[in-house]
Image 1 (cartoon, rainbow, N blue to C red):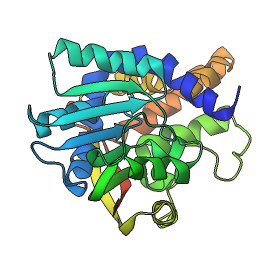
Image 2: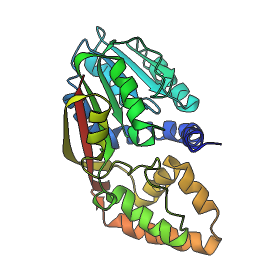
Image 3: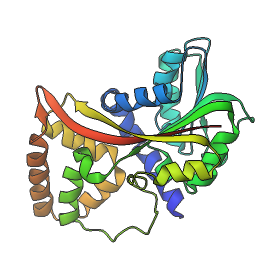
Length: 278
């Protein structure tokens, strides 16, 4: 199985658990969706493509913004997450959004169809980011905007780092090959901006977006959420002896407690928003 096939398989396997936590995950990353909507110029009546939509966000949020006169398409190569997104759209009786199984490098849409193309936390997993972005530009109307959100540095995002540092001590893994698909592939400022420019976009810009990841959960419930969100994490934990797993969990819960706020947890977070015009 190729590395890309492994990524797609993990997302498909995680689909039921992401669906279980859908409302909380939408709340946690909602500010990033709003930043993409703003930078991509999404307004009522727009036609928008959300690439690597996962279980349907931010496509479902964008459907609210564009209204009945607009059109939203969410695309993702993982069948399981697309099926989950379709269920939600059906439950909400949404007529202006649909979901298609497709990877960024082979989009089944005609040239110059969309008013905006966005991707939230997806481009870092593309098998070829430059080819995927070129394909996204192909289906974008001239003069319109493409926008991406990617994680800034690990150390600036305790939502990830306070868990990752502890897990790495108990269950170390080999270092990833250079430029391997991972959540922090484009954490360095300028890296994705250069690729978007190489793909053919103009007026490419980048900004650091600061927000808070808020979850109305106890630290125990947040631990469950974080485990449910990542199949690879669950596999690493499952390989540990029971005593080591108990100690790891205790250390993680202690780390989470530093971010308790009110009736939940709140983590400062940073992403890079990179956008360009066709």
